[in-house]
Image 1 (cartoon, chains in turn cyan, red):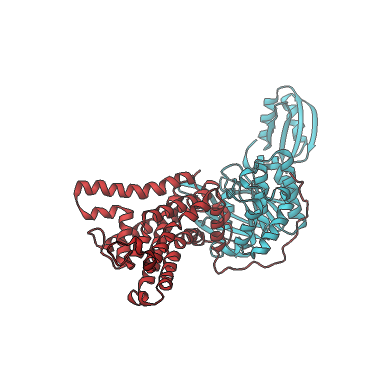
Image 2: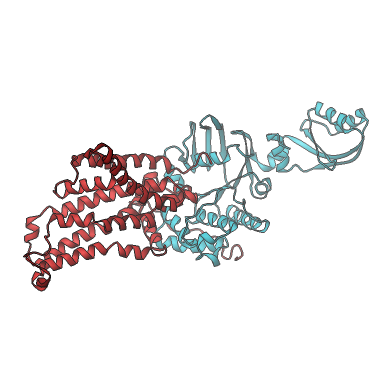
Length: 303
Length: 290
């Protein structure tokens, strides 16, 4: 296991950020998902040793998060969420500087800085002052400094924030390339479901500092419920209530599409029986593939 | 902008080293960044002006015969002794230039990192808070030592060269130690002083103003309090006065203020200790409240 934590808890004063988080993350890209304030960034910071947990223990790449922080940071690349750079530096000096601080020899760090800057698409602007970089370029630069020392594990905190759609796709492509072809494990923290869905094989969903769901994406999608999308004619309120009485969760979109999350044990014929009972006509009925959004809505309770 | 993946990702074949001095890249980069600032090189060169004047004074005093025309009724043009060296160290121009160089070149050492949120990048490396602060402080040490210890020792060497004998050294064998001791004291004090102020603001311009303002205000405060209470101990409120007291102690001179020099040392040590505590709290990898 690359990351293993048990009963991790942390408070900012009176605010509980993490409450008894336990998980084991294996190979490949793992998504860390949750609404704002769920504890994603706090968890990353604890794994890096920025914060000391109030309770619990954990290991990253086999190193203890309380005692072997230097060894963890040597093997991990971290791309923070917020913009961060050093004024007055150009990209190649900046990237080489952090490579050197990671323990690379100076000449090697400089050589490697050129390579990773080309890789993230900043090759031609690598001698430009960082003060003149756009938000998207700074985002790529953060990825470059995280990669410069060739980490075994990458922590990416909201890597596609501040990016335009094209830039976002390019960065996602980079992350996919790194995680799938280059044997670098990735822990991707994001609240953008599409990013996680596009990249990650498994996901951990945090809610109010606790693990709400964890596992392989495919397993989680199939595990708890079946999703049906339908359109009805008639009074939908009573129909919805009837379905909810059967243990299903029902959402209705603005254009009248009704999504029914039926428990795994449920029978799809129950939907038609409920329609018959409440006097509505089912005009369209489709078995839909559950998305991460559905899973997220299911476990976090958001629509 | 260039397209993504102009070159594919490749693994680095080397091995990460555990450095003996992990703070050294921070120091080297801090010094280089200071020299990249506009007009900094002029300031840096200007700070050597007192050393050049002192060197000329040494030369003139030892080559008296060549400068007889300037001397009227005295067999010595300049009296070269510990006081001469001590006066170099606390000449108004030198202190002003050191403050200027530090405020301009080193004021942003921590302030810029706070402003651009780069502390988290430092601490995501195998660096401790101590390494970070030592690296930053070594930048200040470089500038203070290059304007104090280096010229001080060079002046002693030139004094011996111009005199053509070791008589001066035999007369004051402790002088190089005094020079080193006072340079170390200035380094420690200005190191903590400038880093403290740098950590108190995210704006290096404010730090610039604070560096000069605090130094000058302490003297003004001393003047006001001394005017009210007429007590020599009020000199303890003044940073320049405390540095003068410490200088007098280290160079074996009479203290300029009627206060034990040890008290001044204690005040300076107190400022350093307070700075260390504040620096420890301000330099964190995580900003808890934004």
